[in-house]
Amino acid sequence: MTETLLAPAETRSLASLGDYGWFRRAVILIALAAIWEGYARYLGNALLLPSFSATLQALYEGIASGELIARTAATLTVLGKGYALGILVSAVLALFAITNRWGGELLNVLTAMFNPLPAVALLPIALLWFGLGEPSLVFVIIHAVTWPLSLNVLTGFRAVPPTLRMAGRNLGLGGVRFAIFILIPAAFPSILAGLKIAWAFAWRTLIAAELVFGVGSRSGGLGWFIYVNRNQLETANVFAGLLVITLIGLIVESLLFRSITRLTVERWGQQD
Amino acid sequence: MTLQPSPSQQPRPAPPVLSLAHVTLRYATPKGPVTAAEDISFSLAQGERLALVGPSGCGKSSLLRAIGGFLAPASGRITLTGGRTASQPDASRMMVFQEFEQLLPWRTVLGNVTFALKVARKLGRADAERIARDWLGRVGLGAFTNAYPHTLSGGMKQRVAIARAFALAPEILLMDEPFAALDAITRRKMQDELLGLCKETGATLVFVTHDIDEAVRIATRIIALSPHPGRIAGEFAAGGVSHGAGGGPDALETAIRAAFSKAPPLQVQEAQHD
Image 1 (cartoon, each protein chain N blue to C red):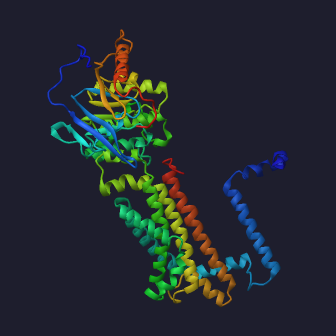
Image 2 (cartoon, rainbow over the protein chains, first blue to last red):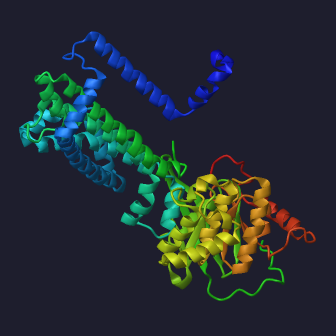
Image 3 (tube, one colour):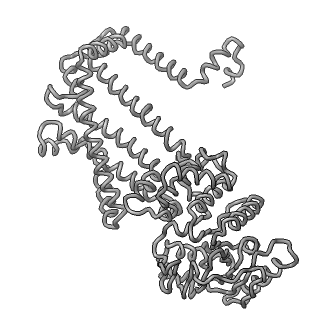
């Protein structure tokens, strides 16, 4: 702290660049890449730890050959299906729960039972029921999405201020229109938080499921790509796969959800 | 108990826009039913401005909610124009609440009023926006139509709610201590503005307040309620007295206070929320 205060004049321009978050992030990322590169070269064992440049090379080749693209597409397709179905199940459960006391209790019990259960733990059962393939993965993703999301949606609905509810009913809104025009937007901060958590659960669940149980080489996703390459000791490809997983996670969590938050709850002054 | 109307008041037109007959309101609480208001009867003619005054716990807010259709009476009847019963809320009675949360935070100032007009009056976008802009201009928010509610001060939020209520041109405006959460200067200013809008439009108003001064300023008629449970302690014609005009309001205020002190049970402290 004192050092910064007493810094000589020449470092002023650097210090002011450091005021930008993106600049600090870029510096940290470059530093991490440099450390990785340096240590990998020092180790000199590409089987254990390929260098950063070798990983980028593998990433480039994977993209150029189309294999990584196809794997990523496979993973995202399964994820999209499971996520969408999970949202649908949550919506039905949450709407049932707010319109009916039994529905509320049902959701409470189901959430208490299933929320602590990691979705991957259901995979053996899913494989037994649906066989080796996409339906099993979709099933575990639905499980990963439904409980945290329903819980958030219900909490959001219940937290809608009574005055706002009355203001809505005063306009003659009821039933589905009341839900669409008042409840859902009013509960949106909570719903968005639920969607974020559900995404994180679904993403991690799917990659783990693919890694462990990978589904046939033709339709396998990113997890399967990593699994196969590890077996073939193509460690650079493994790291390229991990890089793609990280990138997609970053894009969705920092860009997509961040933008939605900025355009909605922040603009409405509802950020908790 | 009733002071007779001052000469300036017009004779009441025949059919009332609102009439309450022996209305009793009860709440179910974990400790059993609580009676909020008991045997309340009055009727209201077109263009009247009625203030329901009383200390906390006299059931005045509950009564307003029952008129709005948010609360069903345990007994008695609330009748509107054309013999309708006030069993469901609708835009024929527009409520302005004390809480700022009555605005939709995800819509702009203009959006809040326009949305109400589209939903409750089935207006097209262009008509709704025209009426909304007109009313927002009248409450002095013409420059804030694109602002989101959370960026406004408390007084401005209440102005949006008032503009929204007036824009829908309801049969009766219901206001539940709309200025109670505002500072004294803003409150005073908004009382005058509300009075101006009411006179301009000839609106029928039921206004709930615990502030006798506010009631005297805004209302043409005042009903004083005694607490636990709320009963009518007295009714007064305020007859559009303007504040500061020769003793009128002060005398009225004294009379209202006297009504409270005579009504059993005697003055109850502000112990419970309404």
